[in-house]
Amino acid sequence: MPTLLQIDFPTEGPWGEQMAAAYAELADLISRTPGLRWKIWTEREEDGISGGIYLFDDESSARAYLAEHTARLSSFGISDIRALVLDVNETLTATSRGPLSA
Amino acid sequence: MPTLLQIDFPTEGPWGEQMAAAYAELADLISRTPGLRWKIWTEREEDGISGGIYLFDDESSARAYLAEHTARLSSFGISDIRALVLDVNETLTATSRGPLSA
Image (tube, rainbow over all chains, first blue to last red; front, side, top):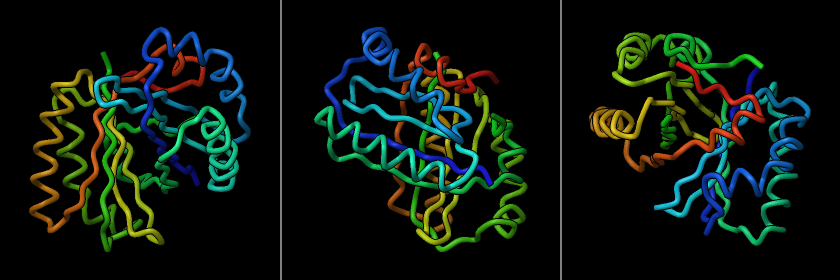
């Protein structure tokens, strides 16, 4: 069953193109995470927030990644990480064109 | 520029197939929201949380929907709604296969 992981945290940046340059290698590493279908990278400079929305094949993949990523974010000096591991209501999501494939 | 809306709130249900039946008409209505590319419906019975991840064409569409949906959730008796309006880092998202099309 697909599992959605929602993460956000306060940060002072980088943002936009500088963020893309700073995390290019990390994005490549993350893209090869076992069980990961996709990740959308989120950011909001005016609110000082970054994060990600992830879709995994199952809950165990999501939780394994969350443990690894939380440790990585902490090593970057990031705290106050808010993470939710959520099920997807596939019937309702189909009605609203939600993308659940790998 | 695509804008991601992340919403979650505490709820006592319904869940799963009962949730899908209860909100089938609402899902159809929401699917026709101006500027909405897609919505993934989220839920987590053991944590008492529901919500949604949305992708809009732009921030104004996202904010218009958020105002409408917050009022609707309040009319259902739902409070403590947490909502973030976020930009998408399209370069990093492309690396991790994030689905940004309508």
